[in-house]
Amino acid sequence: MQLHRAAAAAAVVALLSLSLLTATAHNITRILAKNPDFSTFNHYLTVTQLAPEINRRETITVCAVDNAAMSDLLSKHLTIGALRNVLSLHVLLDYFDAKKLHQITDGTALAATMFQATGSAPGSSGFVNITDLKGGKVGFSPQDNDVISATFVKSIESIPYNISVIQISAILPSPEAEAPAPDPSQMNLTSILSAHGCKVFADTLLANPAEQTFESNIKSGVTIFCPGDDAMKSFLPKYKNLTSDGKQSLLEYHGIPVYQSLSGLRSSNGLTNTLATDGAKKYDFTVQNDGTDVTIKTKIVTATIVNTLIDEQPLAIYEVDKVLMPIELFKGALPPAPAPAPTPEADAAPPKKSKKHGSPPAPAAPSDSPAESPADAPVADQTADENGAVRFDGGRFGAVILSFCFVFLQL
Image (cartoon, rainbow, N blue to C red; front, side, top):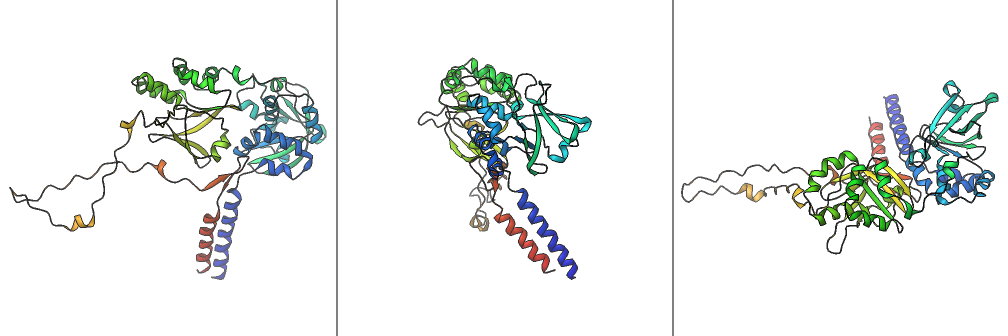
């Protein structure tokens, strides 16, 4: 019996420990802050807003460089946009710790980077070659560069298979990444939308005055939620039935007049005005977290952000899986309210006889109103720090697990 209790308690404590460890996301700035040799690299991850993106992702490798290597990069006097592109080339979208680097199949591996994921990398310039070299060394170079540009120095920290932070000897050279980013006023909004899965929305926008509303807000900051092509195609019949003003309002409803990074959206949940908001005409929606996802909730639909098209201040464009439908235009689309439940007094009262026929009235038909949407359920309690690393409140969960421990120990 004692052995059984000890085994049960050990199992539950192990489960609690594992749950608490996995409930907290990684934070790249905290990892690098432990070593002052990477203070400059760490600083510019925050300045370029790459840190929140790194914290948001899973299965990732950050190739950090020391302060001397960063000095060489800063001497080029690149724009913040170009610096972001260069540093994003050093973030691999796969997990490579020291062991895996020395066990690469066939001696070479090709890794996609965060630069490639932005859609700003022409051709294959957003990929990095990793090569096993003689003497136990590992080399790194952009795919378009045949010369080894940097070598593996050491592992800084690894959390299998979530994040690996390693040091490489030098900055990876890339003319494409170092090219000056276009001025916000020179960005072709509809071209960006068309090239990244939102062509139907872009074409619809081009034929409407709402396009000028978006363009005029780019310089001061704007965030756009564009429905993907499949979602927009299926919505077009409803769109065509709207008035001219309704069409413009619907399109403008997909933008907010401020720049918001993904981590910013996570940390600023709540009611948000849109480009369609005009005094008494509310046209607002709610931004909220659904686990690790960000959702946009109107009173009609709840859409989820499924892709980042561009996130370079002052412009952010995110693809959503549904068209955002404001209640101001689609009141008829609301589901009927559930019928009120009968009161106990009503149940206890005897049926009244009809004055004419002396028989009780027919019982009311049961309500077929739909149940409340799961989207109305409260989301998990969580917060986000200044760099987007999500932390869950494990207090309540830990208390439940400890209660299980107590029960097992009583067996």
